[in-house]
Length: 406
Length: 102
Image (cartoon, rainbow over all chains, first blue to last red; front, side, top):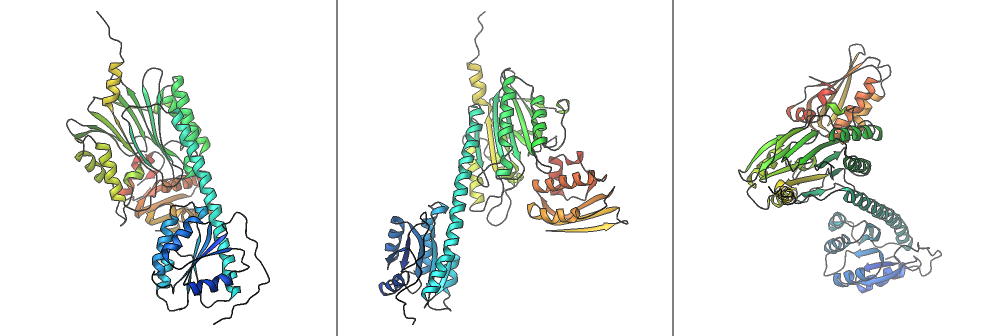
């Protein structure tokens, strides 16, 4: 048994922004001993002998580090580590405390279980004051990294909100349109833009920028700005696409591009015109006869790769009825994998789509099935699913037409 | 997933074989397969995808980067033997308009 040195020469200056408490979870005797060893570390020490008390203290005090003794009776240390990690999932990265397990037996099999449960480090008892303080210094580096990372994440979230607000401000409302969108990280490289042309048509641009995260999202702001401006100015769809392509050629480095599809919805003539450049098949479904009635396959190279002339852009038109929906998705949706590595796939998607066409909650059914399939697997790409039912917008258009009296 | 490069025909042709998943993880290896080559005037790059199981948009990006590199040295990129899955992805991107696909 090491004797405790009573005086330490150095007191450590603790960063004022760091939480000042160390929580020690041990038997009363063990706790007092460690508390004594922590004198001069610069931290205030809280002690708990039970899991319940420990969680309560952690909730109520700004704790930097948590030392858990593995010889604590009653509660298994592994369970306690899990409980604390669970609590931490509610906190920002900058607030997370480091968890250190204290073991007095190098053969303790539970030690690995503690680390697997999320403990950051371990110390073998008995330890000298110097060992303890050195370990604390090492953990402070971990906490510093967490703090910086946490601040970075907060900054990105703020930027993301600005992006979203910019798109929202430029988009028009399309009654009945549903979107399910899940970014793989904080920024989203998938976007859906909606605008009204002076000639009455509704223009929709659904795009998927290469990759995901911030470098993918960079193209979002300039494209949404341009699309909205040019549509409102009355430019033709072909001109708009040519100019957006030109902008992306300048903006994006080689290897980065924007797969997209554009819709022109004409409510008076009851037609939709589609141009697909690199997106998965776009579906027209009929809710009444319950089948997929049309697929629009990609016929053009994604934007931002090569020169594009307006005259080379060919939209394909079909008639639409109130019983039709148009369904679009980004490849992240069908490429999504479940926990065992199986892919969702186009076949599964089409089968689910067809099965649920009679259901009033078609969109929700597809999304629920997708979420169930994915489970807890990590998202690898941005995922977007869009449905535009024509019923509501056709009705709204009819109701707003002035009646002509003979 | 692996990238294997061979120089054939007295340096006139470079063959790059991709096996496994052709995705973001291969970026460095793919670039390393051709960036260091000096004197590639007029050299054509053959990308053999017969053993590639999967391709995503970052792989499309890698092909575009190689295409730019080859073009600036007077050469072309030829994509060979894509499997059914990969052929679909190339078709959706309409890459046959930019590459020779055999």
